[in-house]
Image (cartoon, rainbow, N blue to C red; front, side, top):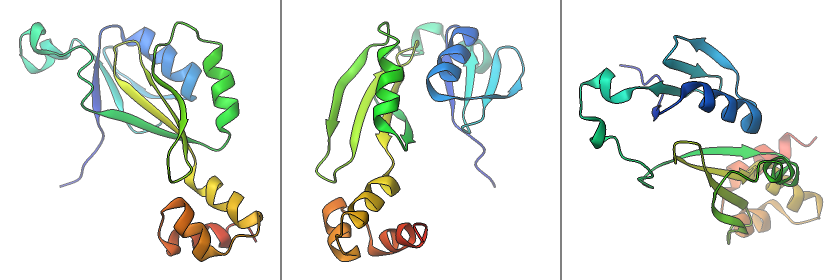
Length: 156
């Protein structure tokens, strides 16, 4: 058995395609009308209730029990892009976690939660460039030393 991809229920597949294209650089891999697969490895499905044969009222709006997760190398550039879309509601403003990752969470047009985080590899490389040892970097960003070593290898 092979897991293929997650699918999220949307009310307007065209609006959702535009949202994910403009904010997350997603490309349409396959467009079947009401079902669209995006380059990030997830799909959008309009009329999900009809597809699976359940009452429309059981498709929850803003359930806040899952999120799509994206990482960006340039967090500030993403925030600039986000500021050009004042209609997008934030779950919370940008913040920094104790593992030094800056993140922001937003809602898509159908109220699915999306987290956008600064790339952990970028963070590791930043600490290494500042002169921290791999062991210190691993402790600061709370990632395994193997991850840090792999990041260091990519810097040379």
